[in-house]
Length: 206
Image (cartoon, rainbow, N blue to C red):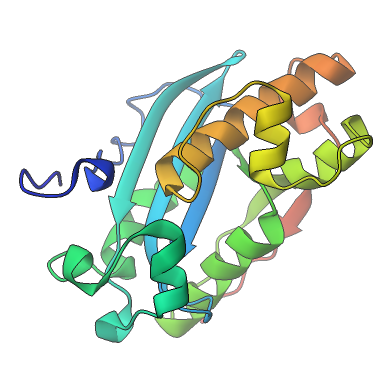
């Protein structure tokens, strides 16, 4: 929940209740991690998509196991141990997030990283993997805009005139959503599922 004395850029917005958003077609997700170890999420950003627009956004800080941070990571996203000392660990956040994954397509920019964070963290806490389909907007950007020097989130966003605070999980997730919309327009589809190859995250019961 929001904390009034928190730095403005780290003010949180709650994950909405399941069913309160209607039938969203896709959910963009972005993680920031506390260390080089993928099972160390310290923030998650979420952005729900429906009919060519974003309908909701959420941003939650997460206390990584042991609350250990690397200076390199802090320099990127500006989150440190004191910022998350009183925040929930991943399993509590997962209870709110997991029900939202049962229908929408999951979207991420450089999805191999964000899905890797999800898998590694679920394994760390002994939680089963959900059955989800996901799509990588970075791979999509390589197909749609091959002329770009690279296809990092900030490069693609700049190409499309999208302004955002990079390495803030909430803003990164929304930028990813807007990139997905631009890709839909570029290839002439109205459903994120039609953007290109999707990948299934297999069910894994522990």
